[in-house]
Amino acid sequence: MGTTMMRMALTAMGTARKTGVALGVGLLLSLGCSGTALSPGTSSRSVGSLVSESLRHPPAGDVVGSEGLYGGFAWRGIPYARSPIGDRRFRAPVPAAGWDQPFKALRFASPCPQYASTTNTDAAFSKGDTIGEEDCLFLNVYAPNVSGMSDASKSAGLPVMFWIHGGGNTSGTSSFYNGSRLADEQQVVVVTINYRLGFLGWFRHRALRAGADAADASGNFGTLDQILALEWVKDNIAAFGGDPANVTIFGESAGAWNVLALMASPLAEGKFHRAIAESALTWSFSSAAAENFADAAEPGRASSSNEVLVRLLVARKIATDRVSAKEKIAAMDDETLSQFLREQTVAEFFEGYRREGTDVEDGYICPRIFEDGFVLPPYPLGHAFRPEASFNRVPVILGTNRDEEKLFLFYNREYTSQVFGIIPTFRDRDRYLRDAETLTRIWRMMAVDEIAQDLSRSMTGNVFSYRFDWDEQPSFLWSNLAELIGAAHGFEIPFVFGHWDLGPNSDRLFDEENRAGRESLSRAMGSYWAEFAWHGSPGKGRGGDLPEWSNWDHSQPRFAILDTPAGGGVRMSKGRDTATKIAETILEDTSYESLERRCQALASIYNWAPLAFSVDDFAEVGGGLCWDFSIHDLVEPL
Image 1: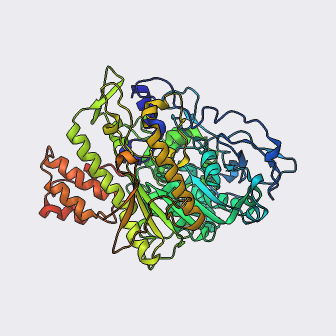
Image 2: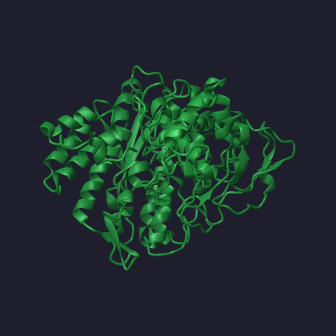
Image 3: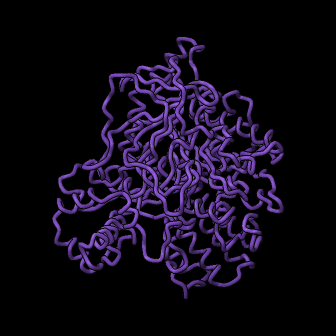
C-alpha cells in the first residue's frame, strides 16, 4: 500500500482507533499501485442507457431505468426526501415531492458531504479534499426481470433487501454497492440508500430544539433519513416487483450499527421484517456527550456541538478565543444561534471538527446515534435488546469476520511498513497477529455475543450468527496477503453481492486461482441471505442444498462458519466470548512487551464495550494490575 493510498484509506475511515469502521475491500485495491480504486463496476457513476421495458408506475411518479449489470433492471438516483438544505438543515427529513413526467433514474446521486476516499469517488483527489452535496437523499433499486414470472408470483411480490452502507456514519455512499447480481440470481429486490452523514446526520444543540417538534429536536437526522427511506419503500416498492410486507434491512459496519438502531427505534416499527447486521457496533451517545462543553460538570466530547460552535465563532472572528466564545454562546438567543448554524458552509463545519494537532488524513469524529428518548431509547443502544426492553422483534442475523482488525492494523505504521515504499510487510509479525486476534475478539463479543444472548432470550429460534473466514488472497511479491489481511473487516461484502469488479486493481485480491472457491462461497452466502429474506431463517439456502444453519440459543450459542471447501467449507460451530474471558487471555499472555502494552489491551475492552467491561472492571482486573494507568490515557475514545 503506497503512502498516497494509505492516506486515502485513512481519510475514508478516520483513524482506525477513532472510528473502528471502514469499507475494507475498496481501501485495499491499489496494493503496490498508484491507481484509484473505483466503486463496484467501473461504469457505476456513468449514465445508464434508458430501457423502455423498465418503466414503472410507483405512486411517487413514473420512473424509467436501465439494464442491471448482471441482468434485470436498475433505477438509480431516485429522490425519497426533499433537499435538506437551508432552513431544512438539522431537521427531520420530509418526503420528496412527486413528479408528473417519467423520472429518468439513470445516474447515481451525489454522495453526502464527506472527505474523499477510494470508496466514494473515482475522480482524482488530494489529501483533505471534501466531496458530496447536502442534497443527497436518494436511493437506488435493483430488480430482476419479472416478465417470466406467473401472475400469482408477481402479485405476491419479491422480498425486499434494503442495504445501508458503512463508513463510520461519516463517509460512504450507496453507489459503491451494485445490487444487480444479488437481485437477479436470488429473485429479490435490492434497495441501496444515501443518508446524511457525520455532523449533518447527527447534531444536537439547545438552540435547534427551541420550538422544534420531537423529531427535529432529536438530532438523529441520519436515522430519520433511513426511516423515511423505509417509508418510501413501503409506499412504492410494489411497482418494482417488491413485497412491502417483507423487507429485510441489512448493512455492514456503520450500516450494521444503523440496522441495530432501527431495531431499537419505535419509529421504525412495522417498516421492516428481518434484519442482518454484518460487523455491527453498539455505541451510542448521551445528550450530554453530544452537546456539552468538554469542561462542563457533565462533560461533553471534544467534538460536541458546543465545542464545534466555539471553533466556528473563533474562525468567523466573532470571538477571539474559547473563553470569549463561550460567553458569546451564553449571551446569544436560540434563534440567532440556530440561524448561525444553518448559515455555515459545509467546509466551515469540516474545519470546525478539526482539533489542534490533528491532520485531515485522520478524517473527523463526531457524536452520532443519540439516546434521545424519541427516535432511539434514552439509554445505551447496547442495552436496547434485553428481554424487558421494547424493540422491534424481528428475525436477525449477526456476524463478524474472523480477522476484522487486520484491516486497521494493516494501515497502522506501528504494525506494518512498506519495502521500497510499495510492498507491505510486518514490523513484528507476532505482535500483529496477537493484537489483531485480541481486538477482533472484543469486536465480536460486542457485536454478536452480547447482543445474541439478549435477543435469544426474547426471540427464541429467531437469532442466527456467522463468522466469515475467507482468507485466500494471493501473495504479492513476498507479502503474504492472506496473513496480513485475511478475513478482514468488510471482506464479506463482495461475497454477499457477488460482485468482484471493484476497480482496475481488483486482481490484487481476486485472481483466477481463488475464483472457484470464492464463487462457490459467494453463491452459498447469497443463497443464505436471500432465504433469510424470503422466510426469516437462512435454513439450507434457497435451493435447500446447503448445510443447515442452526439458530443461536442462549444455552447453546451456535454460529455458521462461512468458508470455501478448501478452508473447511460452510459448517456450524459453537461457543461465545465474554469480556472476562478476553481479559483472562490478556493477563495470561506472556508476549506483551511491557505492563503498559498489557494494560492498553485491557483498556481496549472498555473502549469498545464499556457496557461489558467498565472502568471499575479495568481498575480491579489482575488485582489492580493497571492502577498506575489512567484508562483514558491508554486509549483514545471512539
